[in-house]
Length: 459
Image 1 (tube, rainbow, N blue to C red):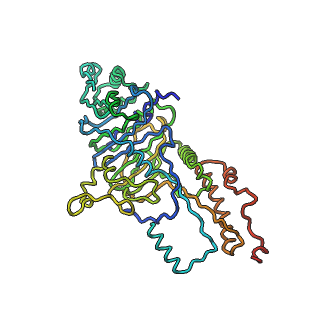
Image 2 (spheres, rainbow, N blue to C red):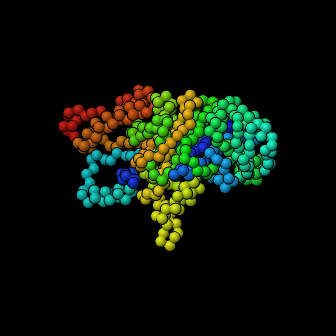
Image 3 (cartoon, helix red, strand yellow):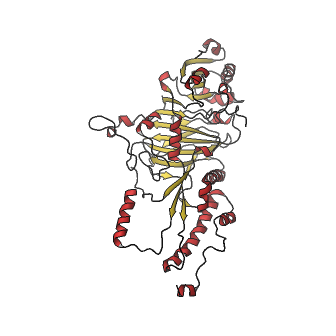
């Protein structure tokens, strides 16, 4: 693999944003696996924090290769001051990804022959409830119609804020100053110049990067105000080789997020599937996502998770703490009087069961320049119903059909359930139904058969 070619397939994609919890049944099974961003090799990640007209964008740099080749160009609505730019923590992306990832859970069928007494039933019910540095010369830039509005060094990045009159001049100036842009950048830059937007331009300061001692680039964060609530993705298609995956984690006060110019639909969820999928849940979810995007002609945005950040059920990872949320741009928590104690100190966000004024919406889109010709525009809805990508394994009881009358009835229902599980898996992934049945053991002659009348007679 040539590691010098990957210039953020979706991050040069340039980000800019203009940009009562219902009761849930307690989860009494076991969370066993999650489908996180690592499954998708060409996935870029963005944490997008938005309230009113205030926006914070955190961009995960998954760049691989010679750091001299790194370049990022982001349209922004105004000239950003030094204090509006920050270098963030990579671990926060890993945590919010893990928290919101689609998950696999498992249940075990109870003994159908067991008949608990009244006191045991009440006790079980109670238990279930409880579980519940070099400056750039502006004179040379002006000859290309480019003006350097501001320049900073932030962490390991050299940052320029540019304005431009012509896209050809901007592209030429960037290339002459060491920014490696893909062919066709001029055409992609033109609409943003026509809108009189500024350009946030970043490259690596090799001296500062060496001082940091880090082997990777940390996320870049920008904060600004704008009435527009959008994310430009068109620049991310000009150097893309094939479809790109983009994961967007949007933090708002309430309500799930959806696109206003593309269909936003929820990923099929809460379906029982055969237990053998546990051994390769990653393959299952990748194939399912690919199959579902193909069914929609790669023209939709999938919602994979919507939840209040105060709790989770089941938890693929703990909710983010107040400090972690603030580092991702959630500025309104300290402004809420409910987040402070009577003596003025901050309350901790409850780990489970307590709602907080932060909702995360996880959106996943696979796109090309043909299927997504426009930038993404969003709106916050009043829908605050929780949702998660959740897939269920149900393990059969291991007893015998002859143990009690209820056992025979259980196995009769089990056969139908396993057939439905196989069909669910086929409908989600497009896998061959016959192969699924074989892998599930449904074609095994030793699997359960309905007892004959005489077997039931002498049972």
